[in-house]
Image 1: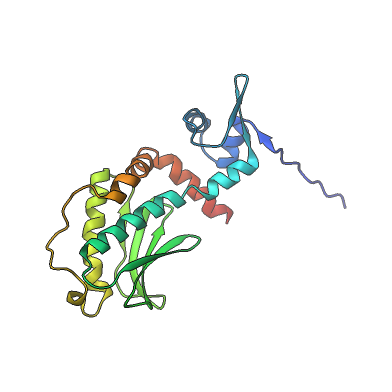
Image 2 (image 1 turned 90 degrees about the horizontal axis):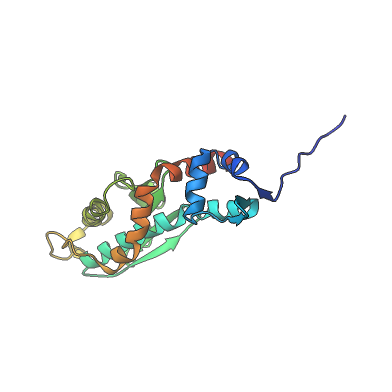
Length: 207
């Protein structure tokens, strides 16, 4: 029996990159021209290093979920009158844990649909309904949903929410430090949502 091993070139072309990423060739040109993917122009031709693309793909989702989690943590802190929230980062999700309830977590997960699910859990079991915040909407709407979710989480996460929730009816819609910091990421995700969704779908299939 003869076994044929196909050689995978380390450097690939635009056509090979499009096939590898499973997206249109025009999308590869677009993200290459804007330096949103590791690449190098040799003469008039774009070339991609396969290993660099693999590393880039692994990091595609990280900024989005990090931006959402840190903005949510900021909203929770602004409403908190007792204790503090800290972040725990995992491979595909980020958890927010309040200092008084270490067995309860607010899980922030990025979905292939390019939206984020937020849910309170106790020892891994859900204690609240999932809240979904999509990236494909206006940035001001994202910030508004984060503020609303932050307040609602106090009522679902704690047995006695008034013990921890400050007496504020509504968070002011000011641009806070983290919102200002992560604003470009939300704008990028909204503008390039179709390319990012295709990449995330590919990642799900290959894992």
